[in-house]
Each structure stands twice: as structure tokens, then as C-alpha cells.
Length: 592
Image (tube, rainbow, N blue to C red; front, top):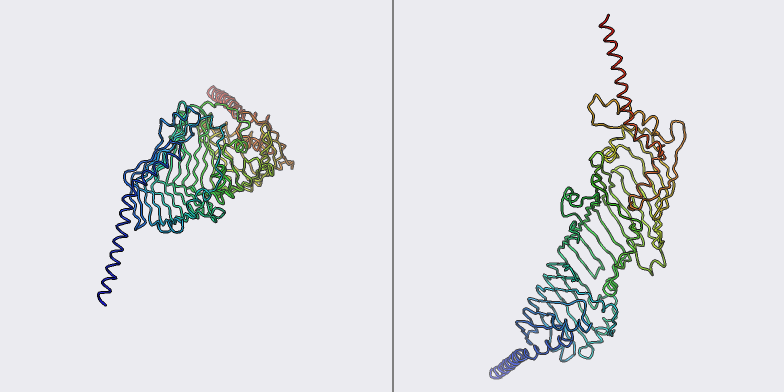
């Protein structure tokens, strides 16, 4: 009996040795064959434009493992030049290097018996991808035959099924170089990670709409990015970008757009009164995005865009000369239509945004500031897609905010995206608030302040286009008192008290209805200067209504600006008169 077991064990050992030896022999002697086949396949597939090389190829039929060290795919520059002469060169060329490519457990028997290839893991470690873009005009007009077969249809004559459980790209180094006749612009992304789960290519998966290009899920993680704008004044950066196809979500964190230098240096280099912007959003999230449409048509189509918290700070320095540019036709909704990137977003939701505008006045050299806290809002039908606009050409926005952290502002916009005159409407209200917080912008710029102002409410209804804003306004308030300021010594301040008295008594209505019980509403008709921005037009049209309701007509406004000087002159004459009187009395006493 023992001899039988010895024979059985011996036969098994011999068979295993033979199998392992044969597999080793095939692994060793298949290398030259595989090497030749791989290199020739790349040459044939790319019309001799690319070459592939590597340092080491390992292939083991026993364990079902394979690996390649230092894989390089590079474009043949001589071949590319010849293709360019024939007007057949592509716009993009690629140079790829992979430090290590490893395939784990690919089950060779299933390939031979069932024509099914299953791989547990593919790990691509430290790949470097350099894309070089040379735009050729002939590629815009030349049409080439397309192969419209699915990926499964292309491989069906070789394999019935290809599946990969996990495909991981780690520490990707990506560079995009765009060449023109005079410049070379480069974009660099480092340390990218991509994880692909459950790849399945067969007769069923090619029709499975729940998969994204035969995959169950793709996760892309870009850890950080910084790009300096062409004018060298600004940079744009983010901390992390995540794309998850399973959730149809794109999330961007730590987005920032800001100058590369201090505010003083910015204006010193600009040498002009130009808006300076600092924008920071901790989180921006696209939900329910159609990734198939983006890949196939480069069109962004999403259910919603969420901007959760953040700041938008705009400032200007009017001590510098203002360079007037024509801003007619450049309102935000008109810029949306001019975007080259096709865009369809059903709704954009804002949450807890802080918006501010600061300005250094030309006359007094001080900075005034106005701000809006806790801005909440929703924009609907944000699109520049012609088919979508054919069904609905109006983009709407409903926004609420707190002016100077106290007065609740509600405003609704409706933009006609197809009107050649850029027409839109805005309607809203401001709730009760104390007007004194507005001194942060009034005092530095006008050298005046509101000693008191009880704002009960403000309502407006406006229609506008590229050239004019028309509408109505109601402004309810009482106890408004204006105080004009001066930097003169205390002995000279009496003239400003006189000016303030004159302004409050004869120029500004201290309440609405006024002291005579007359209610002042406004009919606004504001003509836009060609250099006015969209937001300046909004503010100036509303300011015109506010001044009208306060009884400040253009004639009264001119008088208000002259009041301080007139009062100062009057004070000088009064002082001179009393000085002469008292000198005369002193002389009379001396003579007596």
C-alpha cells in the first residue's frame, strides 16, 4: 500500500514539475514573441507615428502575473513632420512614461478555454503624460472615416469577454503644452490618482446605461493646482478636485482667484482705476452631471451647481486715472452666451456668500466699503445651448442678502438670453434697518455721515437693457439727518454745522411722507454710459430712485455739493462782521 502512495506522490510531483517547467519555458521563450508583437502592434495602430520601448518584461503563466518596467510611448518627430507636410498630422501628440505596470492574476486557462480574459488588478505606478498641442487648420475641415463599432464589436472575434476588477493609476504627472507661432503655454498637474472599478466588456455591458464606458465607477483625485493668468496679475488655484462617476458628481475645494501681489502694488503696476477682484469658494459641487455628454461633445450638462459659502471682494482706487472701455453688451448673461464651452445647468444654488465692494475716493483718499452678508439664491436655466434656449430663453435668479449685516434685501432677476439688446428685469425690496451702518461707504467718499436714518422699507420694479433702466421706486423712512464733516480745527467747524443745518432744512427731506404729508415716489429713467458695468448700472439706477424719493433733485444735489463752500464763505463773512463790531466796541470803550 505504501508503495502505491509513493507512486502517486511521485507522479504528482513529476507532473507539477513538468507543468512548472513548461510554464517557465513558455514564459521565457514567449518574451521575444511578445516583445515583437507589442512593438509591431503599436506601429501598425498609429500609422508609424509612435514607438514603444521598455526595460524589462516579466510574464508568468503559473501565477498569472505580468509586469513591465519603464514603459515608454513616444512620438516619432520625423514621422510627424512628414505627416504635417501631407496635411495628416494630428493636433495632439503624446509622450508617456510608466515606471511600473503590473498585471495580477489574469487566468490564462480561461483565455484558452472560454475566450474570456479576467484580470484581478492592474496597477500603473507613477505614469507621466505629456500632451503637446499644435493646432493645424486643415484638421478643422478634413473629415476622416470613423469606426462607429462599439469596443466589444471590435474585439468580439478574439474574446467574448474582458473584465478587470480594479485598475489603479497612482501619482500621475500630467503636462499639457499648447504651441502657437509666438508662445508656449503649459499646464501642469502633479500627483493625480485615478481608481477604476469593475470594468466589463461583453455583449451585455455595451448596452448597460448604468455603466460609464464599461466601468461601474471611476474616481479621479487631483490634489492641487495653480495657474497664473496671461497678464501675470492674477492666479487661479484649487486645493482638490474629485470626480466620481458612480455619483455623477464633480467637487472642487479651495478654489481661489486673486492678485499675485498686494493691493498697493496692483495699482502701482496697473496705473489705472481698475477693479481688483479676490474670489474664494471653499466648495463648489456639480451634481447629476452627464459625463457621457461631456466626453463625447465636451458639453457640461448638470442638474445643479452648488456654491457653499465663500467671498467675492471687489475694490477700486479712484486716485488713479480711469481707463474707460465700452462695456455695453458685456453683461453677465450676455457673456454666458459668448462662452465657447457649451453649458446647460438646470439650477445654480448659492449659500452663505459674502460680497463686498470697496473704493478709495479720488477727493479724500479714504476707502469706503459696502457689503452683503449671507447671500442665498438660486439661478434657473443657466445655459447657452441653442436647443435648450429654443424651449426657454429666460434665465431667472432669486437672491436674498443682508445689507451691512442688518437690512434684508430680496431681489429677483429675469434675463432674456436671446434678446439682442440684452433686456432683463429686476424687482425687489429692502426691509427695515438703521441707516447709520451705511456710513462706512458714505463717510470716506463724501466726507459726510448720516447722524440718523430710520429706513422702514424700500421697493423697486425695474426694466432694463443695454442702454437704459426704467421703473418705479418707493422709499419709506424718517428721522434722516445728514452731517457734513471737515478736517478743519475746532474753531472752524461752525461753518460745517451751518452747512449741515442748511442741507437738512432745505435740500433733503428728513422723512417720506415729508413734513407736509406729501409722499415722494420715484419714476426712474437712467441712461447708461457706455463705460458703465452691469453692476454700476444697477446701483446708479437704484440710487437715482433713492435720491428722488428723498427729495434730492439734480438741482438740489448741485446745491448740496455747493452748500459746504457757501456755508464756509458765509461763516467767514459772519466772523468778519462780528470781529469788526467787537473791535469798534473796544475802541469806543477806550475813548470813553
